[in-house]
Amino acid sequence: MSQTHHVRSTNLHRLFIQSMLSRRAIKEDVALEMYKRAVGACQAHDDTFRPLHDTTLRGFRTFITDVSDILHDLGMEVVLGQEQSGTGKSWVVLRNTDPSEVALQATDYTPLEIDYYRRVVKEIIESYPANSISHNQATSIVSELEGTMAKHVAESLLESLCSRGWLLRSKRRRYVLGVRAIAELETYLKQQFEDYMQNCKQCKRVMLDGVCCSKEGCEAHFHSYCYTSLLKLPRPACPECKSKFSEYEPTPIGEKAVSRAEDDFRGLRKKRKRPSAAQKGKGKSRAGEDGDGDGDTDEDDELEDEEGEGGESGFIDKAGPSGWKVDSTSRRRSVVPETQYLDDEAEDDDDEEEQSATQRRKSRR
Image (cartoon, rainbow, N blue to C red; front, side):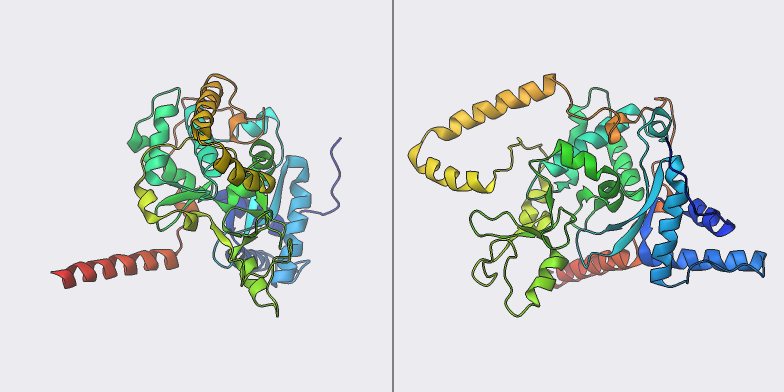
């Protein structure tokens, strides 16, 4: 039985919802500006219109709570997400909460494209501690698909997934999960990749990029911006094991955990379960006792890989991208202009890097 909402929808709510439907995920400062302009548009249409909430950040966050209340019966909600890297900028995400058949058909991706994205997600999560894959690795996934997909088609699909917020491509051309993907697939990711998913000990949110405590037996993970805030304390230490960061420098998690040489890696790696804190200590002692243990482990991994290929995909029915059902004849433009996520600052940074590289080549000549 659906819950009844007590918020009466107005033109302001409808205008904002329409804007979110065309973007699905946008930075909070942009969403706030969009809210202010929506208020102005409503007042231009009706001089007597007055918004229920101020056009401040606090008022806006209360407003999106009302929007979620209105959308509840439609199986949707507006939530706040956060970037994994940088300063952890907030995003506003319109996500689906309804697993029914009607909701699952609300995509124009074909079954083959959905299967490709599912495998990309799997490769990213199981690449721990990198939590990212290179462009070459992403395009190599086409060889594992049951259907046929050319690499240039995969590249166009990757562009589309980035433009819609399902993926994010770094300056190193490595792919990570986008803010929208983490917001919509968080429950699914924790269920399917329990051995790999971590929450930040500081903010309690999903953590895919940052650092982890290097003290043996401690598995505390932190976003980079959360770790920076801890360093500002009088005695910076891990809140989990109480060890000082000055004595145990944290280990990087994310693309910083792999060298740039691996950015050109083309093959797909053999996956291993991420060892727990207890297993880390046992692994070191066993390595000294068993000289031929590695060979047995490789054989076991190969058996697991063969069983995985021939068995179930591991995806929960009607949960996450594997549950989407669409018409395989659907046609879609690879890039959606109104949902491009590469901001002007990133483009400027890329231009500066290209210019500096050109200058270095000229100086060598």
